[in-house]
Every structure is written in structure tokens, then in C-alpha cells.
Length: 287
Image (cartoon, rainbow, N blue to C red; front, side, top):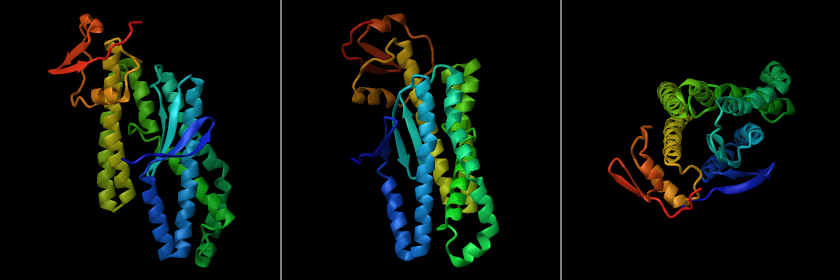
């Protein structure tokens, strides 16, 4: 019903706004209408966060490109961004490097602008009394530093599918394999999401509550995606050019996939029965 909107393209990668992002812009407008100075401060924070998230996700994208992994686009939402890559790195080392690229750049940007943050701490009282703490060069630099340091450090939390969670999965995958490692990482991510949620309720911190819900939901989506890929791999259909609607139907099976050995006869069959459900595979050419 609602479509994402492309707003730019960097290094050949489309940058898109999720439709819900406009709810945030509407909130900014309300702030400006209610309090011009406070609203402008809020707008500056949103713009700096916007720039920081794009830089963070571009780091993932460009490093993934080094490992010959294609990125569809970078999608920006009110609670963050995501680089939507075409495939999961097959080597745990590659996934670790790609996952750490984003936090590494964010922390680097934060450290490069750290002098502004230090200067602002000294001048904060005067600037705050003047009501221009966020609207000075020093204040903007300080905000940019703080945002990037928080963005980099927070993403290292091992809550899958955040960057730290992807590093955790890559480490586990060395011994458990991708599927089991994803399940463990997703479980850890859900546990941390619950902790975030409870903490958010206790502190009345709505931002933390929203992040907790996002992490919990996306952890499950990532797990189902890997289960789907593993099922397709065992059927010998990995990379098959099926239409999106068909792939969506597979993802909507509603059952957990266990990697038991799939009968070899299924590889040449047009119908696959999985736990009582029949899946029809369209005509395809054998490799």
C-alpha cells in the first residue's frame, strides 16, 4: 500500500526512506510549530542522525562490495537504517568484517569530532542560557560526535540483528553452522530486546521501547529468512529465479524448519510436501 521513496544514490546504492519516516517529519513540524527554537534543535538532531546512519550503512555496503556481495539499497526508518544485502556472507570472517565496518566508521567519526564535544562541555552552561546550544558550530559538532559514538557503541550490543549480534552469529557459525548459529543469535537478541523493553517501561523511555520491539520482530524475520535459504539449499534450488510472490509464499509457511536430510527424489520433483503442506515449484531448467 505504502511505498518507500528513493531520495539519493551514493556509490551506486539507492538511499530510500521508509514511508513511516514521514511520521517523524510530521513530529518535527509539530515541534517547530509549538516551540520554534526547540523545534529547530530537534530538526538539527534528526538531520545529524540521518547523515550518521547513512554513513554507517554505507560502510557496511562498501565493505560488503569488497567481498562481492551486492546491496539492493539502504533503507532509512525512524529508528535507524539498514543496508539490504543480497546474500549472507558464506565465510564467518567476512560477516564479522562487514558487521564491524559500520560501528568502526561511526566511532571514527565520533572521535574525529570529539574536540567539539569537549569544547561544548566547557561552554554548555553559557550556551544553554542563551538557548543556542544546538545551533552553534561547536554545538552541532558536539552533537555529531555524541550521535556517532552512541551509534557505534550501541550497535556493538550482541542483540541480533544489530551489528554486534551479527558478529556473535559469525563466531558461533564456525562451530554450529549458519542455521544453528542464527537461531542462537536470534534467541539472544530476543532476550536482550525483552530487557530493553522492560528497562524502557521502567524509565518511561519510548525510544528504547520502540528499539526493543524492532529488534525482537526483526530477529525472528532474520531467522526465518535463514531457515528458508537453508531449505532451498537442501532442495538444490538456491538462487533459483522464482517470482517474489512465490518466494513470499515460502517465507509464510508458518513453521520452523529443521535441517533434517531432505530426500534426494525431491530434487527432481515439481511438488514438495513439507509437514503436511504442498509447495509447487514452477517449471525450471536443471543446471
